[in-house]
Amino acid sequence: MHAESDVRRRRCYLVRHGHVDYFDAQGRPLDPRAVALSRTGTQQAWALGQVLQDVPFDRVLCSDYPRARQTLDLLLQGNQAPVESMPELREIRAGRLREIPSEALREQVVGAYRAAGVAGARFLGGERWDDFQRRVLSLFFELLQDPAWDSALIVSHDAVNRILLGWAAGLGLAGIAAFEQDTACLNVLDIDMRGDQVLGALIRTLNFTPYDPHKAGIHGTVLENLFLAIEPAGLRA
Image (tube, rainbow, N blue to C red; front, side, top):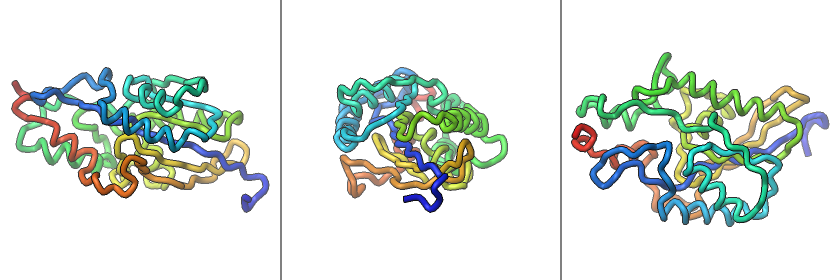
């Protein structure tokens, strides 16, 4: 029961896609717009689908990158819910890693989220963080202005989820490094509204991974794992 009868509480399920390989065996980067789920990623998404199988969704939104759509299909598991493919939910775009000096590569990759709140900061020399935040939040606020749903599912990417979690916590870009997003993880947000006015948000669930709920096998961060996958010599070959 809500404290105020005129407050409407709506629920949003945020999912990061399952595991993918962003680099080949020689450490060369693959096109992030086209990479598909690995076998591990498929298993992770299937496990999350078991958790969500009885949850009804009024709206289903998905990044238009293959790894997000593959994850969504495994979550829905035959459910014919209409899917809205949204380029606004694409992951933040990195610059050319080969242009980062090798001696600075680890610091810049591992610390990329900690630098997001700096004025004019770009993600690894690519997309500006403030532009990315505007892209994601503009779509999210547009979603909130649609009164025709109570439960929405959004399947996208690590940094997209961090933007939404940072907004929900009132921290903005400066706080996104704290919201770790493991592959095929689930976050649950409740948004309180009075009419078309957003009153605030509650983070009900954060970074839940049903394939490893206690994180016993998860130790590195998203960006630490990214750095470990990079072979600097291969980037400059």
